[in-house]
Image (cartoon, rainbow, N blue to C red; front, side, top):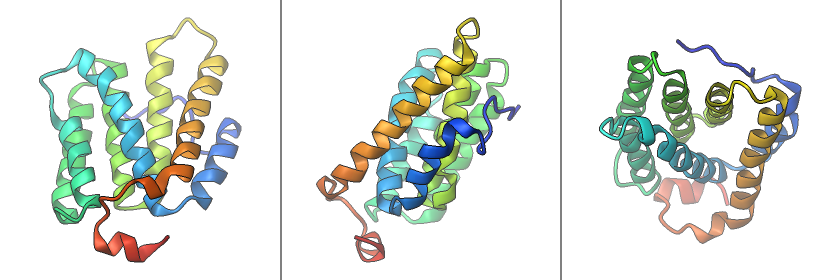
Length: 170
């Protein structure tokens, strides 16, 4: 099940979408990896033995450092999505695994960056169905926004880039 409870064109995402569009690929990679790590903790609370989302994150870091090639990273990303498909009975875990897969897909295509937000917010909405959804959306979108601002200001702190990413943008 891939039902999203918030759509990419939702007005609540406008500021975040603008920041994503102006961010460099390197910033988006670090942001997505950071957010995915936070979401992974929640996923592993339910499915500690399912390592596919964790491996996708690890492969994302390895690709960004130039240690592995894209096909190996993409295989791990697809396996994180397969994890989501297999956990459809747990709507929160399913959305978390999908968020991680979409987030790590940012290494391949920067337009996938919004996916971690869409599915991440969906996971939180499903986790707290009795709380006002507008409150959850506002809080979680702000969390993603602040993390992206952090990486906008700290991208130069990360020193493990693959040579092709160093040339791509500064």
